[in-house]
Image (cartoon, rainbow over all chains, first blue to last red; front, side):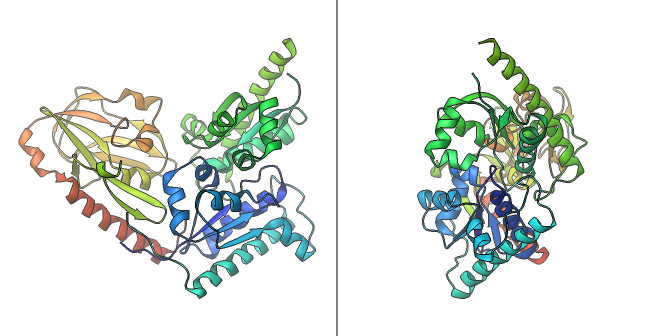
Length: 143
Length: 136
Length: 156
């Protein structure tokens, strides 16, 4: 059985900091609007709690980890349980690189916060497109 | 037992229940019971972060899960945390069938209402726990 | 575990069809128990529907016709109706599902069973599909769904 190539985008849950909210929303923007046909998310809590299907995906398909802070929970979880990530994006690093202030609220992003999330989403898309250009992606694998 | 009560959501990204659990948590720790409750990252806990594991062992915790997978509750228990209560966003939808919602990224009006009902429940539970703590 | 099921992977999901059961084309499974069948929905259908929050089952004693709706499963996305693959009388319902509808998602071929039907005509069982036959049908449904999503461009 074949299906279109898919890349997993894994976001940290990041409740305690605003960068976690940014990573979550940026990931959702990619899934829903920017690359809906070629991406799928893996629920990090489910992945960590041992859901067989989610871990299997990360074993066989390339994944991009999107983390809020330097603790890199998404990247570390993927690498601990499934293998190397294809790419790691850390929101905190991007904000510093861009010279942009952190959005004010972790609960709800204002207009400026949404602009930041959109920029992060674009970085994710660049990473996805680079993976597809390199030909490294795989298609579905039957068990 | 003193110190804030830790309200820990699952924040699952694939389902609207995760967004509801996250929003309800923020509602509680930033509005309804500010100063009495706090939150922390579930993924840090599961990845074995020492500070986070110490926090859940030394503070009473409320798990706020989205769906029946109950990732927050399970992982608090696995970490040896003090689970004082757990809630599931999906149960709120069972009680309020008229509030169907699907938007995962940003909650719509129904989603916010469900989050609000859930937040009220959590807040009341915190009040109970604080009373129990005062008696000890 | 692997030997008990036919399995196929699509996206991040593993879709399972339990061996040894019979199946309806409407994604129901049936376990023959004497002159009755114990009925449930397949792993494929529960995954498509999503988390089940509410279930409405028939009453014990209700007579059902083939293809008649016998249950409603409400998820956050939609209401799924389940039709009986065969005719008979409802002799048992799974009362656990009142408080734990998630059993249908967690264990669709086991604890998530829906009802037990006493068959009007035991010979009707021959109309049902074997597990291998349903597995092929399910794979086609998954493939068609993937093609539809590609045309529609919807991610998860």
